[in-house]
Each structure stands twice: as structure tokens, then as C-alpha cells.
Image (tube, rainbow, N blue to C red; front, side, top):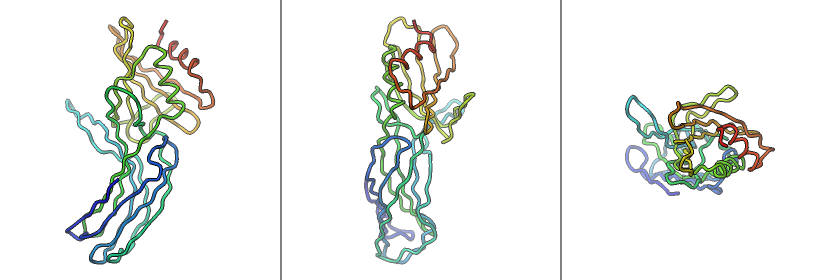
Length: 248
């Protein structure tokens, strides 16, 4: 959390700071906080005050890959108002973050996932004031159960990142413009697996899972399953994964 002071081009002396009261939470939960801002040396017209939920996503373009900030959701807090010189304002907020928000708090060798709240004060004929505050997004109970079950099946979480795009299966589709990939490798020497890439598409009462399975000497295979949130049993989930991946 920090305060950014803009100077020049119509925002001299304007300050903007967002305080998050619960920066550690699960996807689908309610984020609470307050926005503090203060006018500069002259009166200004504000076109909009926005909160944006953002992540950094990997984009594929031809033979190249690059990272790009991506807006997952956006909330208009206030629009078309005057900001008198040197006047302070405080606006509290509550908002539910999407169920598909990528998780950031996982134990692996390489975790490239970052999620943050970007606060933007859109000034008429001026440079926007912004503030960035990072979130710690925990796995939901369904995700945590699945991660534990994969470990019981002999897989180790190797890396996590976010890809721009959409996942589509016969009974679900992602909706926020990106998806998270959790890459698992086998801890068993002669398992026959190169890797298993897992993506969650969470909903209020169930979590869909897409698995891209890369086996040695075989073509890749896309599989999917759905976890009802009222049936969270690690042992049963491990058995289901073994059947799905044909692990003896």
C-alpha cells in the first residue's frame, strides 16, 4: 500500500491512497476498504473514480510470449464530480471479487501469479492518479482439497502462472478473460507423465477442473471434472483423480 503524489499536467498536489482492510481472502469473498484522496492546488473536475481488480497474464503472439496487465473486473465508485482544492475525501467500499480470481498463495518452485487492486482517479484534461495494492488470494476449500489429493497421487506442484484466453469444456466456460495454469510433475521416476496442467473454473457451489495431461510417447489429453462444494473428501478426490488419469 502506498500513496502516489501526481505533479504537473493538472494534478499538482493531488494525493490518492487506498486502504484494504482484508487484503488476504478467497475468491468469491467480499473485499473491504476505503479510498482516501485530497485535492491539489486548484479545483479539478473528476470524470470517474474506479477500482480495478488486475493480474499479470502471459500472452502468446506468434512465436513470442510477453506479460500484460489484465483487468479482471472493474467497479465505478463515483462519477462526474468536482474536487475542490486541498479538500480531503474518504469513501468506504465493499465488493465481491470474482470466483475465478487467480489464487496467489500456493507453495511451488515458481509462482508467477500476482493480483492487485488498482485505484484510478480519472481527471478531465489531466493525468490520472493511481494507487496499486496487492491481494493475497487463498485457495478455496475445494481447490485446497484437490491440491492435497494430487499430492497423494504422487504429483508435485512445480509452477503457477496466468494465461490470457478462455477455457471451454462441454459443461463450463471461463469468463474473466484469463485462466490460471498449475503445472504438476510426477514425483515417481517411471510414472510415464511429463506433466499435468490444471486449471480451476470456480462457481459459487461447484468448481470445475480442466486437466491437460502430457504423457511420454503419447499425445496430450484434455480431461475435466467437477467438484461439488458439499462433497469435499481428500481420499475420494484422490481415487477420482487416479481413475481419471488411469493411475494404478
